[in-house]
Amino acid sequence: MLRRMVLSGAFAVVAMVAVAPQAAVAQTDYPSRPVRVLVAYPPGGFPDTTARLFSDQLGKILHQSFIVENKPSSGTIVAGEAVARAAPDGYTLLAADSQMWAIAPLMYRLPFDPMKDFEPISMLSENNNYLSVSPKSPIPPNLPDAIRFLKAHPGQFHYGSAGIGSFHHLLMEVFQAKTGIKLVHVPFKGTAQILPALSEGEIAIANHSLASVSSYLAQGKIKMIGIIAGKRSTSYPDVPTMQEGGVSGMDIPGTMALFAPKGTPRPIIDRLGQAIKTAVTQPDLRQRMDSLSVTPIGTSPEDTAATMKADFAAFSAVAKDANLKPE
Image 1 (cartoon, rainbow, N blue to C red):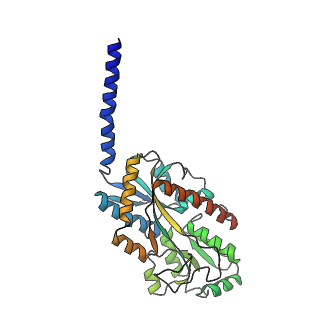
Image 2: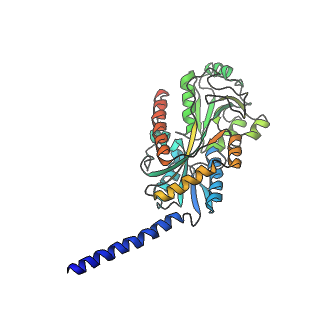
Image 3: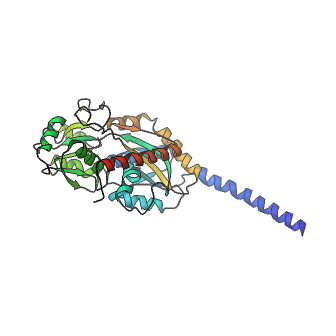
């Protein structure tokens, strides 16, 4: 009996040892097939552009296709839920901006918990938005005059955002709270719709990233009057900061990060994280992102999680100060 027990234990140990290398091989061979990268916005905006630039680099570094899929919805709900419920094998990822983890929880009843249902992989980028007015509106194309004009015409002009509870929505609510301006909110279904609406005069004022903006500027279809940042951009050095235009406390950058479903093995997370750190050193990526006033970033999962928590605390305070409530 004792001999049988010893032999049985020995076989169990051998079996465990045999299985462990197979699991390790499965993880270190990652990725062995195409990877889906879900984005919660339509094509053309800053989140989509960032996701595609990084997916292209990850494909080159890891020798596998990283395919971007756009799943736009308010509060990043559709894309976030799809990834939260996906198999934790590293083949379905979420490229999300700070709306997902710092703003949407304040505005919606989410079917997932941004802090608990994902494995943070790495921050991808940080960017600053610009405040612009439509040339088809009577709003003066410089910040101090625009503020005075809008304060004299409360509730008469519309601003656009990428949707209720979006980063753009929050920034414009903060802008109104700090200036005493009263505007009418027009929510769109994504960032790609903001610039066309602004250029055609459907809305009078909006904030936006630099993604896909060059043609509108070259043709004079929008007028940038301020950058929502602590310093001027090297791409458009003539555009003053909000502080310079008389609006303090609006140095609020937008951020993006990459996530996997909760329970994804750490070797896969680390492999993706290391590839991102390699990607941010590539000249073509840095040059393209610099042209959009975007800073590429590669961070550890722990640092990414810390940034998420800090962002949520900061945006909670901002939303409270701006009296931003669910609509």
